[in-house]
Image 1: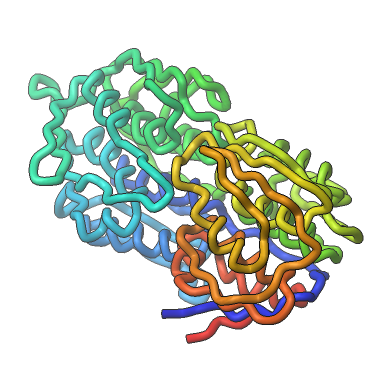
Image 2: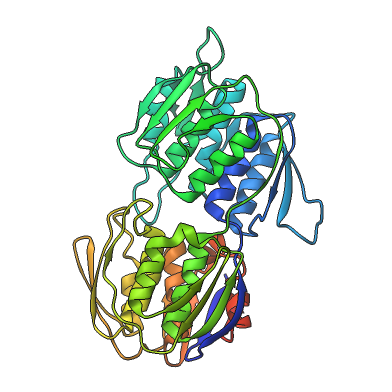
Length: 424
Protein backbone atom coordinates (compact mmCIF):
# COMPACT_ATOMS: atom_id res chain seq x y z
CA UNK A 1 0.00 0.00 0.00
CA UNK A 2 1.45 3.36 -1.06
CA UNK A 3 2.30 6.10 1.42
CA UNK A 4 3.46 9.69 1.14
CA UNK A 5 6.64 10.87 2.82
CA UNK A 6 6.79 14.63 3.33
CA UNK A 7 9.69 16.66 4.68
CA UNK A 8 8.09 19.92 5.69
CA UNK A 9 9.29 23.48 5.79
CA UNK A 10 9.44 24.38 2.10
CA UNK A 11 7.44 27.25 0.62
CA UNK A 12 5.69 26.71 -2.71
CA UNK A 13 6.61 28.51 -5.92
CA UNK A 14 5.65 27.97 -9.55
CA UNK A 15 2.78 26.96 -11.81
CA UNK A 16 0.11 24.33 -11.29
CA UNK A 17 -2.55 23.15 -13.75
CA UNK A 18 -5.98 22.08 -12.49
CA UNK A 19 -7.62 18.88 -13.72
CA UNK A 20 -11.26 18.36 -14.63
CA UNK A 21 -13.72 18.02 -11.77
CA UNK A 22 -14.20 14.48 -10.49
CA UNK A 23 -17.71 15.28 -9.28
CA UNK A 24 -18.69 16.45 -12.77
CA UNK A 25 -16.88 13.70 -14.69
CA UNK A 26 -18.58 10.80 -12.89
CA UNK A 27 -22.22 11.74 -13.62
CA UNK A 28 -21.26 12.78 -17.17
CA UNK A 29 -19.81 9.34 -17.80
CA UNK A 30 -23.10 7.84 -16.58
CA UNK A 31 -24.98 10.17 -18.94
CA UNK A 32 -23.43 8.24 -21.84
CA UNK A 33 -25.99 5.50 -21.01
CA UNK A 34 -28.79 7.81 -22.16
CA UNK A 35 -27.96 7.52 -25.87
CA UNK A 36 -26.63 5.02 -28.39
CA UNK A 37 -24.47 7.72 -29.94
CA UNK A 38 -20.90 8.63 -29.00
CA UNK A 39 -20.17 10.98 -26.13
CA UNK A 40 -16.72 12.62 -26.08
CA UNK A 41 -15.56 14.02 -22.75
CA UNK A 42 -12.52 16.30 -22.58
CA UNK A 43 -10.51 17.40 -19.55
CA UNK A 44 -11.16 14.02 -17.90
CA UNK A 45 -9.15 13.70 -14.65
CA UNK A 46 -6.95 10.63 -14.26
CA UNK A 47 -8.30 9.39 -10.93
CA UNK A 48 -9.08 6.09 -9.28
CA UNK A 49 -12.79 6.94 -9.11
CA UNK A 50 -12.82 7.66 -12.85
CA UNK A 51 -11.12 4.34 -13.58
CA UNK A 52 -13.65 2.55 -11.37
CA UNK A 53 -16.56 4.18 -13.22
CA UNK A 54 -15.04 3.24 -16.59
CA UNK A 55 -14.73 -0.34 -15.39
CA UNK A 56 -18.39 -0.38 -14.36
CA UNK A 57 -19.54 1.04 -17.70
CA UNK A 58 -17.39 -1.42 -19.65
CA UNK A 59 -18.91 -4.26 -17.58
CA UNK A 60 -22.34 -3.12 -18.74
CA UNK A 61 -21.30 -3.05 -22.38
CA UNK A 62 -20.30 0.58 -22.97
CA UNK A 63 -17.52 0.96 -25.54
CA UNK A 64 -14.70 3.05 -24.08
CA UNK A 65 -11.98 4.49 -26.30
CA UNK A 66 -9.09 6.85 -25.65
CA UNK A 67 -8.16 8.46 -29.02
CA UNK A 68 -4.63 9.05 -27.71
CA UNK A 69 -3.59 6.29 -25.27
CA UNK A 70 -0.85 8.60 -23.95
CA UNK A 71 -3.41 11.30 -23.15
CA UNK A 72 -6.20 9.99 -20.95
CA UNK A 73 -7.85 13.40 -20.62
CA UNK A 74 -10.06 12.68 -23.66
CA UNK A 75 -12.40 9.69 -23.66
CA UNK A 76 -15.08 8.48 -26.05
CA UNK A 77 -18.04 6.55 -24.63
CA UNK A 78 -20.71 4.77 -26.67
CA UNK A 79 -23.53 2.80 -25.08
CA UNK A 80 -24.91 1.30 -28.28
CA UNK A 81 -25.18 -2.27 -27.02
CA UNK A 82 -25.78 -2.68 -23.29
CA UNK A 83 -25.35 -6.27 -22.18
CA UNK A 84 -26.94 -5.83 -18.75
CA UNK A 85 -28.57 -2.92 -16.96
CA UNK A 86 -26.95 -3.81 -13.68
CA UNK A 87 -24.36 -2.41 -11.29
CA UNK A 88 -23.09 -5.12 -8.97
CA UNK A 89 -22.19 -4.75 -5.32
CA UNK A 90 -18.54 -5.50 -6.12
CA UNK A 91 -18.42 -2.31 -8.18
CA UNK A 92 -20.71 -0.06 -6.16
CA UNK A 93 -19.11 -0.79 -2.79
CA UNK A 94 -15.85 0.88 -3.88
CA UNK A 95 -17.52 4.10 -5.05
CA UNK A 96 -20.90 5.47 -4.00
CA UNK A 97 -21.19 7.53 -7.20
CA UNK A 98 -21.98 4.28 -9.01
CA UNK A 99 -25.59 4.85 -7.93
CA UNK A 100 -25.69 7.45 -10.73
CA UNK A 101 -26.24 4.73 -13.33
CA UNK A 102 -29.74 4.12 -11.89
CA UNK A 103 -31.49 7.10 -13.47
CA UNK A 104 -30.00 6.74 -16.98
CA UNK A 105 -30.60 2.96 -17.14
CA UNK A 106 -34.19 3.29 -15.98
CA UNK A 107 -34.89 6.19 -18.34
CA UNK A 108 -33.51 4.57 -21.48
CA UNK A 109 -34.07 0.85 -20.97
CA UNK A 110 -37.05 0.80 -18.63
CA UNK A 111 -35.31 -1.28 -15.98
CA UNK A 112 -32.24 -1.29 -13.79
CA UNK A 113 -30.71 -3.40 -11.03
CA UNK A 114 -28.26 -1.43 -8.93
CA UNK A 115 -26.64 -2.42 -5.66
CA UNK A 116 -27.27 -0.24 -2.66
CA UNK A 117 -24.07 1.69 -1.86
CA UNK A 118 -21.99 0.47 1.03
CA UNK A 119 -21.07 2.48 4.11
CA UNK A 120 -19.39 5.85 3.80
CA UNK A 121 -16.60 6.88 6.15
CA UNK A 122 -17.72 10.50 6.46
CA UNK A 123 -21.34 9.72 7.27
CA UNK A 124 -24.73 8.58 6.06
CA UNK A 125 -25.60 9.43 2.46
CA UNK A 126 -28.99 7.78 1.97
CA UNK A 127 -30.38 7.15 -1.50
CA UNK A 128 -34.01 7.35 -0.43
CA UNK A 129 -34.43 10.67 -2.22
CA UNK A 130 -33.39 9.03 -5.50
CA UNK A 131 -35.92 6.24 -4.97
CA UNK A 132 -38.81 8.49 -3.88
CA UNK A 133 -38.26 10.79 -6.83
CA UNK A 134 -38.28 7.99 -9.38
CA UNK A 135 -41.37 6.50 -7.78
CA UNK A 136 -43.12 9.83 -8.35
CA UNK A 137 -42.18 9.44 -12.01
CA UNK A 138 -44.06 6.14 -12.07
CA UNK A 139 -41.18 3.74 -11.49
CA UNK A 140 -41.77 0.53 -9.59
CA UNK A 141 -38.97 0.26 -7.04
CA UNK A 142 -38.15 -2.74 -4.87
CA UNK A 143 -35.20 -3.38 -2.62
CA UNK A 144 -34.28 -7.06 -2.49
CA UNK A 145 -31.09 -8.73 -1.28
CA UNK A 146 -29.25 -5.41 -1.13
CA UNK A 147 -30.21 -4.33 -4.66
CA UNK A 148 -32.56 -1.68 -6.03
CA UNK A 149 -34.73 -3.28 -8.71
CA UNK A 150 -36.35 -0.54 -10.76
CA UNK A 151 -38.86 -0.81 -13.59
CA UNK A 152 -40.64 1.89 -15.57
CA UNK A 153 -44.47 1.90 -15.87
CA UNK A 154 -45.63 -1.18 -17.79
CA UNK A 155 -48.18 0.67 -19.90
CA UNK A 156 -45.63 2.90 -21.68
CA UNK A 157 -42.19 1.62 -20.64
CA UNK A 158 -41.27 5.29 -20.08
CA UNK A 159 -41.10 7.32 -16.93
CA UNK A 160 -43.61 10.15 -16.55
CA UNK A 161 -42.95 13.77 -15.73
CA UNK A 162 -43.70 14.67 -12.12
CA UNK A 163 -43.47 17.39 -9.50
CA UNK A 164 -40.62 16.35 -7.18
CA UNK A 165 -39.68 18.19 -3.99
CA UNK A 166 -36.76 16.49 -2.27
CA UNK A 167 -36.69 16.44 1.53
CA UNK A 168 -33.09 17.61 1.52
CA UNK A 169 -30.58 19.08 -0.90
CA UNK A 170 -28.73 16.19 -2.49
CA UNK A 171 -26.18 16.50 -5.28
CA UNK A 172 -26.26 12.91 -6.54
CA UNK A 173 -30.02 12.80 -6.02
CA UNK A 174 -30.48 15.89 -8.20
CA UNK A 175 -28.19 14.42 -10.87
CA UNK A 176 -29.89 11.02 -10.87
CA UNK A 177 -33.40 12.46 -11.06
CA UNK A 178 -32.38 14.95 -13.74
CA UNK A 179 -30.96 12.16 -15.91
CA UNK A 180 -34.07 10.07 -15.34
CA UNK A 181 -36.34 12.96 -16.31
CA UNK A 182 -34.72 13.94 -19.62
CA UNK A 183 -36.28 10.91 -21.40
CA UNK A 184 -39.57 10.89 -19.45
CA UNK A 185 -42.96 11.66 -20.96
CA UNK A 186 -44.04 15.18 -20.02
CA UNK A 187 -42.46 17.79 -17.79
CA UNK A 188 -40.64 17.20 -14.50
CA UNK A 189 -40.38 19.98 -11.93
CA UNK A 190 -37.46 19.31 -9.57
CA UNK A 191 -37.54 21.57 -6.52
CA UNK A 192 -34.93 21.96 -3.77
CA UNK A 193 -32.37 20.91 -6.39
CA UNK A 194 -28.65 21.13 -5.66
CA UNK A 195 -26.94 24.15 -7.25
CA UNK A 196 -23.34 22.92 -7.23
CA UNK A 197 -21.30 23.83 -10.35
CA UNK A 198 -20.93 20.13 -11.13
CA UNK A 199 -24.74 19.77 -11.30
CA UNK A 200 -24.85 22.75 -13.66
CA UNK A 201 -22.11 21.21 -15.80
CA UNK A 202 -24.08 17.96 -16.13
CA UNK A 203 -27.21 19.90 -17.11
CA UNK A 204 -25.28 21.76 -19.81
CA UNK A 205 -23.96 18.46 -21.22
CA UNK A 206 -27.47 16.97 -21.23
CA UNK A 207 -28.81 20.00 -23.09
CA UNK A 208 -26.01 19.64 -25.64
CA UNK A 209 -27.22 16.03 -26.08
CA UNK A 210 -30.70 17.31 -26.89
CA UNK A 211 -32.33 17.50 -23.47
CA UNK A 212 -34.58 20.44 -22.54
CA UNK A 213 -33.57 21.60 -19.06
CA UNK A 214 -34.29 25.13 -17.84
CA UNK A 215 -33.71 26.77 -14.47
CA UNK A 216 -30.05 25.75 -14.57
CA UNK A 217 -28.05 27.30 -11.69
CA UNK A 218 -31.20 27.54 -9.55
CA UNK A 219 -32.88 25.23 -7.06
CA UNK A 220 -35.91 24.81 -9.35
CA UNK A 221 -35.22 22.74 -12.47
CA UNK A 222 -37.79 22.30 -15.22
CA UNK A 223 -37.10 19.29 -17.44
CA UNK A 224 -39.18 18.70 -20.56
CA UNK A 225 -38.75 15.08 -21.56
CA UNK A 226 -37.66 14.18 -25.09
CA UNK A 227 -37.95 10.92 -27.04
CA UNK A 228 -34.22 10.42 -27.42
CA UNK A 229 -30.82 12.06 -26.98
CA UNK A 230 -27.87 12.23 -29.33
CA UNK A 231 -24.09 12.39 -29.05
CA UNK A 232 -22.04 15.33 -27.82
CA UNK A 233 -18.50 16.65 -27.40
CA UNK A 234 -18.04 18.37 -24.06
CA UNK A 235 -15.24 19.79 -21.89
CA UNK A 236 -15.56 19.04 -18.18
CA UNK A 237 -15.42 21.96 -15.77
CA UNK A 238 -12.23 22.57 -13.76
CA UNK A 239 -12.09 21.00 -10.29
CA UNK A 240 -12.86 23.76 -7.79
CA UNK A 241 -11.85 21.58 -4.83
CA UNK A 242 -8.41 20.85 -6.27
CA UNK A 243 -8.02 24.58 -6.89
CA UNK A 244 -9.00 25.38 -3.32
CA UNK A 245 -6.67 22.71 -1.95
CA UNK A 246 -3.61 24.19 -3.68
CA UNK A 247 -4.59 27.66 -2.50
CA UNK A 248 -4.78 26.38 1.08
CA UNK A 249 -1.39 24.73 0.61
CA UNK A 250 0.37 27.96 -0.38
CA UNK A 251 -1.52 29.90 2.30
CA UNK A 252 -0.08 27.47 4.85
CA UNK A 253 3.49 27.16 3.54
CA UNK A 254 3.98 30.64 2.15
CA UNK A 255 5.27 31.37 -1.33
CA UNK A 256 3.81 32.31 -4.69
CA UNK A 257 1.93 30.07 -7.14
CA UNK A 258 0.10 30.60 -10.40
CA UNK A 259 -2.92 28.33 -10.84
CA UNK A 260 -3.97 27.73 -14.44
CA UNK A 261 -7.08 26.18 -16.05
CA UNK A 262 -9.30 26.89 -13.06
CA UNK A 263 -12.77 28.44 -12.71
CA UNK A 264 -12.59 31.05 -9.93
CA UNK A 265 -16.28 31.98 -10.18
CA UNK A 266 -17.17 28.63 -8.57
CA UNK A 267 -15.08 29.43 -5.49
CA UNK A 268 -16.50 32.70 -4.15
CA UNK A 269 -16.97 31.48 -0.55
CA UNK A 270 -13.52 29.84 -0.49
CA UNK A 271 -11.72 32.86 -1.97
CA UNK A 272 -13.42 35.14 0.56
CA UNK A 273 -12.11 33.05 3.46
CA UNK A 274 -8.63 32.78 1.94
CA UNK A 275 -8.48 36.56 1.66
CA UNK A 276 -9.53 36.72 5.32
CA UNK A 277 -6.63 34.37 6.12
CA UNK A 278 -4.19 36.81 4.50
CA UNK A 279 -3.65 35.23 1.07
CA UNK A 280 -3.11 37.87 -1.64
CA UNK A 281 -4.72 36.88 -4.93
CA UNK A 282 -5.00 38.18 -8.47
CA UNK A 283 -8.03 36.50 -10.01
CA UNK A 284 -8.69 36.20 -13.74
CA UNK A 285 -11.19 34.34 -15.87
CA UNK A 286 -9.27 31.02 -15.71
CA UNK A 287 -6.32 31.71 -13.42
CA UNK A 288 -5.42 32.71 -9.87
CA UNK A 289 -2.06 34.12 -8.80
CA UNK A 290 -1.63 33.65 -5.06
CA UNK A 291 1.04 35.09 -2.74
CA UNK A 292 1.49 34.42 0.99
CA UNK A 293 4.25 36.06 3.03
CA UNK A 294 3.02 35.90 6.62
CA UNK A 295 1.61 33.40 9.04
CA UNK A 296 -2.10 32.88 8.25
CA UNK A 297 -4.85 34.55 10.21
CA UNK A 298 -7.54 32.28 11.72
CA UNK A 299 -10.80 31.92 9.79
CA UNK A 300 -14.06 30.64 11.25
CA UNK A 301 -16.78 29.24 9.01
CA UNK A 302 -19.78 26.97 8.73
CA UNK A 303 -20.18 24.47 5.89
CA UNK A 304 -23.36 24.41 3.87
CA UNK A 305 -24.69 23.71 0.40
CA UNK A 306 -23.45 25.69 -2.60
CA UNK A 307 -22.97 28.63 -2.94
CA UNK A 308 -22.03 28.65 0.76
CA UNK A 309 -18.75 27.22 2.09
CA UNK A 310 -18.24 23.67 0.75
CA UNK A 311 -17.85 20.72 3.08
CA UNK A 312 -15.18 19.38 0.71
CA UNK A 313 -12.89 22.29 1.73
CA UNK A 314 -13.47 22.03 5.48
CA UNK A 315 -10.52 19.75 6.28
CA UNK A 316 -8.02 21.73 4.18
CA UNK A 317 -8.98 24.97 5.93
CA UNK A 318 -8.69 23.26 9.29
CA UNK A 319 -5.09 22.37 8.42
CA UNK A 320 -4.52 26.04 7.65
CA UNK A 321 -6.11 27.08 10.94
CA UNK A 322 -3.85 24.78 12.98
CA UNK A 323 -0.88 27.13 12.38
CA UNK A 324 -2.87 30.37 12.28
CA UNK A 325 -2.15 33.29 14.56
CA UNK A 326 -5.16 32.89 16.84
CA UNK A 327 -8.26 30.78 17.45
CA UNK A 328 -11.01 29.68 15.09
CA UNK A 329 -14.27 27.72 14.99
CA UNK A 330 -15.30 25.33 12.23
CA UNK A 331 -18.88 24.01 12.16
CA UNK A 332 -19.71 21.04 9.92
CA UNK A 333 -23.37 20.76 8.91
CA UNK A 334 -23.29 18.30 5.99
CA UNK A 335 -21.63 15.07 7.17
CA UNK A 336 -21.68 13.89 10.78
CA UNK A 337 -18.33 12.08 10.70
CA UNK A 338 -16.22 14.60 8.84
CA UNK A 339 -13.89 15.43 11.73
CA UNK A 340 -11.95 12.17 11.62
CA UNK A 341 -8.82 14.04 10.48
CA UNK A 342 -8.77 15.94 13.79
CA UNK A 343 -7.18 13.09 15.73
CA UNK A 344 -4.46 12.72 13.11
CA UNK A 345 -3.75 16.46 13.03
CA UNK A 346 -3.44 16.48 16.80
CA UNK A 347 -0.78 13.79 16.39
CA UNK A 348 1.17 16.40 14.44
CA UNK A 349 0.91 18.84 17.34
CA UNK A 350 -2.28 20.68 16.42
CA UNK A 351 -4.55 21.90 19.20
CA UNK A 352 -8.09 20.98 18.12
CA UNK A 353 -11.04 20.19 20.34
CA UNK A 354 -14.48 18.95 19.32
CA UNK A 355 -17.84 20.12 20.70
CA UNK A 356 -20.66 18.38 18.84
CA UNK A 357 -20.39 19.38 15.19
CA UNK A 358 -17.96 22.23 15.89
CA UNK A 359 -14.17 22.09 16.00
CA UNK A 360 -12.33 24.62 18.16
CA UNK A 361 -8.81 25.29 16.88
CA UNK A 362 -6.06 27.04 18.82
CA UNK A 363 -3.39 27.97 16.30
CA UNK A 364 0.15 26.87 17.15
CA UNK A 365 3.46 28.23 15.86
CA UNK A 366 4.51 24.98 14.24
CA UNK A 367 3.53 21.34 13.73
CA UNK A 368 5.85 18.35 14.17
CA UNK A 369 6.15 15.49 11.70
CA UNK A 370 4.69 12.11 12.63
CA UNK A 371 3.08 9.04 11.06
CA UNK A 372 -0.60 9.64 10.35
CA UNK A 373 -3.42 7.82 8.57
CA UNK A 374 -5.83 9.19 5.98
CA UNK A 375 -9.46 8.33 6.66
CA UNK A 376 -11.17 9.80 3.60
CA UNK A 377 -10.46 11.81 0.46
CA UNK A 378 -10.47 15.37 1.81
CA UNK A 379 -8.93 14.31 5.13
CA UNK A 380 -5.95 12.98 3.18
CA UNK A 381 -5.53 16.35 1.43
CA UNK A 382 -5.61 18.15 4.77
CA UNK A 383 -2.88 15.87 6.14
CA UNK A 384 -0.74 16.63 3.10
CA UNK A 385 -1.07 20.36 3.82
CA UNK A 386 -0.26 19.79 7.49
CA UNK A 387 2.77 17.70 6.50
CA UNK A 388 4.03 20.45 4.21
CA UNK A 389 4.32 22.86 7.15
CA UNK A 390 5.37 20.40 9.86
CA UNK A 391 8.95 20.24 11.11
CA UNK A 392 10.66 16.96 10.19
CA UNK A 393 9.12 14.00 8.36
CA UNK A 394 5.45 13.17 8.03
CA UNK A 395 4.41 9.76 6.70
CA UNK A 396 0.80 9.53 5.48
CA UNK A 397 -0.68 6.05 5.23
CA UNK A 398 -3.75 4.94 3.22
CA UNK A 399 -3.26 7.52 0.46
CA UNK A 400 -5.49 5.49 -1.86
CA UNK A 401 -8.10 7.92 -0.55
CA UNK A 402 -6.08 10.78 -2.05
CA UNK A 403 -5.78 9.03 -5.41
CA UNK A 404 -9.57 8.83 -5.63
CA UNK A 405 -9.88 12.58 -6.07
CA UNK A 406 -6.54 14.24 -6.87
CA UNK A 407 -4.70 13.89 -10.16
CA UNK A 408 -1.00 13.25 -9.34
CA UNK A 409 -1.03 15.55 -6.33
CA UNK A 410 2.49 14.67 -5.17
CA UNK A 411 3.94 15.38 -8.63
CA UNK A 412 2.25 18.78 -8.78
CA UNK A 413 3.48 19.67 -5.28
CA UNK A 414 7.01 18.49 -6.09
CA UNK A 415 7.03 20.79 -9.14
CA UNK A 416 6.17 23.64 -6.76
CA UNK A 417 9.16 22.89 -4.52
CA UNK A 418 7.64 20.59 -1.91
CA UNK A 419 9.73 17.68 -0.62
CA UNK A 420 7.15 14.93 -1.09
CA UNK A 421 7.69 11.35 -2.24
CA UNK A 422 5.39 8.41 -2.91
CA UNK A 423 6.67 5.38 -1.00
CA UNK A 424 5.72 1.96 -2.32
